[in-house]
Length: 363
Image (cartoon, rainbow, N blue to C red):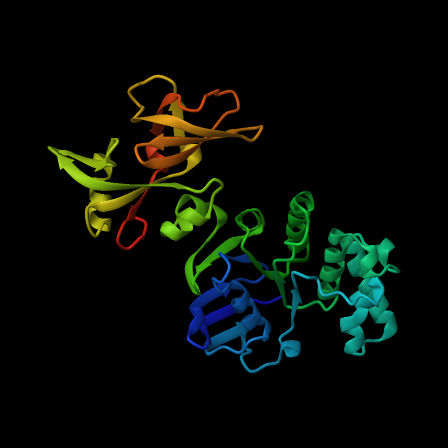
């Protein structure tokens, strides 16, 4: 096993900066996910690590060794692609053993290693089948087996679950996470699916337009997002954002959102030191907003029910507050009709404030 270190890694395609000065340390045995929207640079970063692309500048270290000039076959990494890339004319046994046969390992050693990997992945009974005779989940396991049999230092996965149906994806997320922890292999995983990233990763590297936005654990990127992009990308439904102004009334400091004012006097010093102007953005996650059908002291604003989205265990309620549309998570027993008036409150300990100009988090 080995760690991976990227120093100032940059990749240009003509005038486009696909990866821009990426500095990242993936620890030994860690499961790190490169997360972000399409075109953010995550797959290019992985291809650079694998040696499938040449960096414009910067360095790549695997196990402490500089690998910029090494071909893919000499980097001791294994990659699982979105398409699995199995050989259709070969059996499962031949697909898995292929990397070892290419390296001219002895036949008895090949068989021993293939059987060990098949037992690990529970696919020993599939050895005589060909890829067309396998389900999507089985094909994915074979692709994993072909990568694992080489005993690489680093495992690279490029959206390996995207071709599976929703139910199988949930199952395979748990299987992959369990497998990675059992074998302890350093794993770099690429996805645009935030649920995959949050459920599987030790840490998440969130990218946008080739730039690393935040590197942290699942809980940190969700509870303490570094900026507006991170805050809005993670969460289903995403965080609500409301433009507001910072005002002072006597000794009180207030956030004025137009339809309501929020007392933030207890956060005065933090807000003043972090804000570049009085224009801020208030961020609140749907689960941190409370609803009541009648006004009470802790309720801050009146809203109108725009639509409800029942999900069985919970209901997503879309509310109109002035010109803003706000999403709220509530229990399945809170019955409301479209057009009905309700009162909302928020958990101040869970709220977020962002500088409107820089988009950086203040609290």
